[in-house]
Structures are given as C-alpha cells and as structure tokens.
Image (cartoon, rainbow, N blue to C red; front, side, top):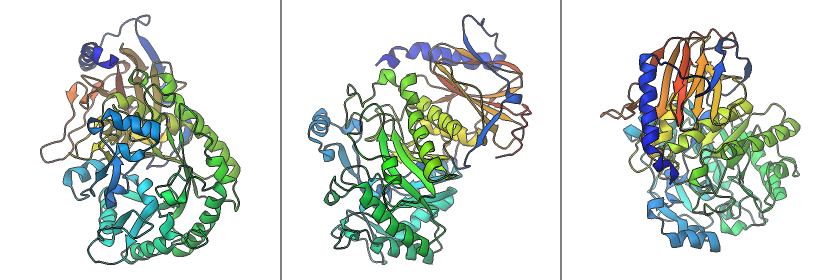
Amino acid sequence: MIYRQKTVVAAGLSMLAAACVANGPKVPSESSVRSATVQAESLPLVRTMDERFQSFQLGFSHLTGGDTWVAYDKMPPEAVKERQYTGNLSAVREPRAPTDLSNRRFRNLVAGLGPLYIRYGGTTTNTVYFQDNDDPKLTEAPAGYKTVLTRKRWREALDFAKAVNAKIYTGFSVGHGVRNEAGLWTPVHAKAWLDYNKSIGGEIYAAELFNEPNMEGHGDDRLGKDYTQREFARDYAIFRKFITEADPRIKLVGPSDVETGGGSMDGTPGTADYLTAEPRPKFDIISYHFYPAIAERCAGPDSPRGIKVENALSEEYLARQDAPLEDRKALRDRFAPGAPIWNTETGGAACGGTRWQTSFLDTFRFIDTQARLAKAGMDAIFTHAILSGSNGVIDEKTFTPNADYWAALLWRKLVGTQVLDAGPTKPGLHVYAHCLRGTPGGVTLMAINLKPSTATIKASASAEVYALTSPDLMSKTVLLNGKPLELRADDTLPAITPVKQDGGSVLLAGHSVSFIALPNAGNPSCTSAL
C-alpha cells in the first residue's frame, strides 16, 4: 500500500504547512514549489448551478430493509471469486435492517449539508411494495415484490427530509408485481403511494420510473436481461401520463441508466438509446449514473474495469467523469433543450465503493468530481451514499462522519452557486473557483494538491484558509488546519474556523484539499449571496 509508506512524510508536510500559514509563511522559490496564480477579482463567470447541487442518495433499503453490499472486513476472498467468475451477486451482499431516521446525530450531520436533494433510490426501489394500511408491517412482500414500505415508514421519510432541508427524489416499482397480463407497467403501486402521500401533505419533488433500466434484472429476475429500450419507452409513456394526472408538480427524471468507466459495458443500452426510443420519452431532467470504476466485489483491482489504490489520485482516473457529461449535454441539447442534467448516482466505484472510499484518500476524488462537473455543466450530483458501511459519507453503524463528510460540509459552507473560471487544471494541482456563499463579491477557491510535495496559490486578496489533511491517507481522520475534526459530545458539529492570512501566497500541504475563501475579492460576477 504505497500511501502508508508515505505517511510520515505526508503528516510532516501537513503540520508544517499548517504552522506556516498560521505564522505567515516564507514561500519557497518558484523553482522548488509548484504554484498557481489566481486573479480572483476578475475571474469570469462560467455558469450558475442548482443551489442543491451537492446532493446524496439514501438507498431505499434504508427505509424498508433489504440487501446491501457486504462490508470489506466481512467479505471472504472466495465470495469475490464467486461473484467475479459466476455472476452470483448474492455472494457479496448482506441483509440490512431499516435505518433509524430519528437518530439525533444522523439528523445533525445531514442537516449540516442542507439544502440538498435526497434520492430515496437504488435497486430496492424497483421492487418495493407500498402497504396501504396502518396494520403491522407484512412479514413477507407479496408475490412480484421484494420489500415492503409501510405508511409509517414513509411518514418518517418525509419527516426526515423536512428536518434536514431536503427535497425528495424517488422511483417506483417496475417489476412483475405491477405488470398486467400483457407485460405493461401499471400504476397499481404508484397510485396508492401517491394518493397517501398527498393525503398527508407530503411532497415529492422529482421521480423516475426505473433505477438503471440497462442493468440486467432491474432488481426483479423475472424481467430478465431482454427488457429493451423500446419497452422502457412504452412503459414510460404510461408512467408520464399517470404522473401528469396524479401530481403534475413532480418533475420527471430519466432515463437513469448506468455507465462505468475503465472498460466496456458489454453492449448494454445507454442514454442515447432511451432518448431515441419510440414513443419518444420526454424528461424534465436528464439523468444518468456514472462510476469511474467497478469495486473489487465485482471486478478485481487488476481488471481493466477495476481501480488500484496506487491510481486513486491519477489524472486519468479523476478525468473519467468528463466524457460522460459531455455526451449527455449533447443529447440534452438535441432532445430536451434547456433541461437540467443530473448525475443521480456516483461514487468511487460501482458495487459498493472502493476499499478506501471512507478514508481521506477518497476526498480528493469527491471534491474534484463535484468541482469539475459543476464547471462543465452539471446541475446536481448525487453521491452514493449519504449513509453506508463502505461508501457513505456517514457510517451507517455508528452515524459518525467518514472523511468525505468534512469536505462536503466545507463545500456547503463556502461554495456558492456561481461557477467561475480559474483556468485549466495543472497536473497534480487542481484549482477551481466559485463565488463565496453568503458574501457578495467574495470568491472561494478549491485547491486540490494531489502530490506529496507542497504547492502554492498566489492570490492578491486576504484569505481565510480551510486546509484539510490527514495523518494517513488511508485513515478516516481529517485535520482542519492541523486539528482533528470531531463531533461534539452532544452530537453537534464542531466550530469550522479558518486560518486568516493577508494577501499573498497560500502554502498548500502535500496531499491536501484546501478551501480558500477570499471575502474581499470584489468579483463583479459574485453579486448574489447564494
């Protein structure tokens, strides 16, 4: 594990950089340190993104219970081999109980990231049964379904979203249980659910018909692998007519197909296939899922579709998000001009995330993905997941923050909706810019130092520096300006305070992610406080 071998060096640089910032550093010569110069006062406006751009998935299995990806520490090597060589997905899955959405710590953590969208989604959604009464929960789902959503549980989901300032995006059953004798989708499940939702004043902001219609099985083996994009278009036409009549406020999202980087998807349909199918689907929001790799539960690290830990900070891996968005932008402009584009499920790797997704090593990918896609034209991005054992920003067993949470919190605190152009990224040093949230004229820089050596950012305005480092890249521990970030004893968030520095160069520690607020930049594009 090459990153552990560099632990002492990285930690030393982290502490050194924090001390230098606090005391007014003497910046090393240009020839010895990589640097970038930013004229914050004149950075041009690129675009304005959704205020809820940074959003998350809370898998539907957290509402109903159901299968989830087995934790790496519980996963025997033979299970991986069985999945990889026989296709037996159950070998790397384990049962999950419904999550306590009233947990104080969990609510405090998610509320700190609001406003946001929460996607109650995932494979479980495709075969959920809505129990439209107040009886105790069924011990077994009816034929054609796999899990049960009760009225009580849906009320709790609505209450949770309201408490954390989230708008809800979800999906509906598509399996055997909702199909008629001709195999057509019917709203037998969706109507009962929406009628009840309306009766209690619930609001669903956006909805999709399918989670990943191009994946074999769709959560219901009876659909098989031969469900075509033409059949999807046929079902979607029924779905759209139903939603328009049942609750026209709901924005329709699709096609929500999935793509992974690093290798072929074996000829499975993609977004273009669904957008061109007849009858031609009409989506209010164009959506897709993208993972830059496949986790070793489903593809070994030596597979072309896998990812090795030594490549976690490579330019090639980080850039895998670029082409899929450009493809969807072209399709959007052709088939749904003006529609927002949402990446409604993403993370370090499909099949439950990488071994290091809960550690600081993943924070570089997490922030770089959000910043590069915001600049390139994405309107909202849903990280999978807000809560999980292997790939959540919050640990589902302890409700404690994983490393990415702290970067997400700084994004929410400092990153405004106006995206600025800080110029092209440099290998090993990525710099992005937005208007500073809540401060007209202010600018926020995100400086991602992918190398173990120090770097500098030159900015003329006074700076407030929030530098994230870790004593070990494979650790969940995150340091803010050299001090560990931890929840308080009462489960509230700690104070998030910067190191202030007069105009000049900001020293970036090796292997660091820094948010640099420039409240006095005076950028004329940053007139809004959002």
